[in-house]
Length: 521
Image (cartoon, rainbow, N blue to C red):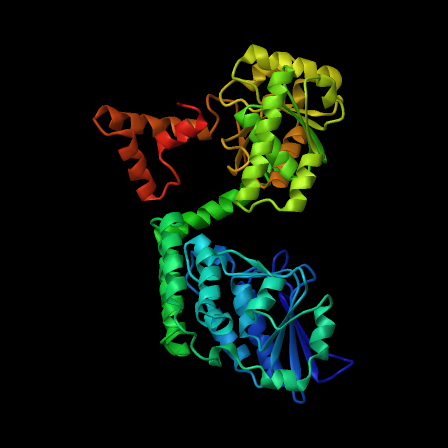
């Protein structure tokens, strides 16, 4: 059963409903039907005082099942189920551990009361999939937490934690044991908690709306869903709840069949599948808590920064003292830039500095579980580096090349154990760009590859396995992209005009700005 429900044997005034659709309690047809059946059971049970709605100990519910979006909707529909819960004579209490996202948050909003554990998270990430919330998120949330806070959550798709949720009024209580806290809620508390759909219309916040629109113009160029979400949130200031719900549902059904939504769903499933290749499922990756980066230039500094930010003790090895000092300076400048942008807190700065060092001695790599080579693109130099590393590192340590184009099979053939070599191709700036190509050589051991994927997860990267070929995947695509840009250049367009056209289309930057960042100038 995907939804379990029962009357409490110890207190017959309490009725429990438990979501049981692992791993993330996705709200699919079976869950919707289960909630509908639970509601009917509640209606048929006399003497109840409260209904306790729970997920698992680690997650409440992580939204709808995107796999259903390519098929026609099948009843019972989530808005109808939530309407039954919201208008129930017996108040429902959402007991929230872990994440309540998308439809999961909409489910919690339909409850009369919301109690969460300290680590609970709340969000409506639908715009990231090219759609809008489809079960009341755009209509209930602004009525509960106000126009500005709701607009930010819905149009950004970002989640907030329990403390912030309590501050804005999204939840009623934080407790380390939300089940016991819900049982202790008094009848007066429940009686005075109004259904969210019956709360007054929020006042339109013109300043928040202007700020949001300006932000969307910068970061969401050409995307339909954030614009539609803004329109739906704005409706709450002057439209009754029923009409707003109708408008939201119509928009949701329209957008989920759009080309943008289909493309973003494909991307979602592709990224999820790429993170865990089936062929590596039975291979135990190494735990990596010590690493060495050979080369402290722009790329090496970015890689080292990503490693220490993930809590991995890292040594950068350089050729001489002058180069080592420059590497240390680059590392410090990246930390300072992170602090300036608000990405790194004071405590984190101290942690990062304490687990980073530079050296000119390859012996400093002796205890590392992985070495990442980030020297310039000369195969002879790279082979020399790896031969030095294999002399001092454990035989089980992984060797990884950050090469962009070179044949790692040639490098592997020059080593004592070719199976320990893989490619880890980062993209500039390495501490920011999410993509990490994990290059599989002819001799690369499955354990080494699995460890590369584990490291990618530690670093917050999106890993993609690539074969040995010229430019792997990303650079092969970029080569065709640059050819098209250069053709326009030959026909008289300027680099700035081409860049402007691409950013206008939605790219973060144009081809020539990207090449400048990589060192073209």
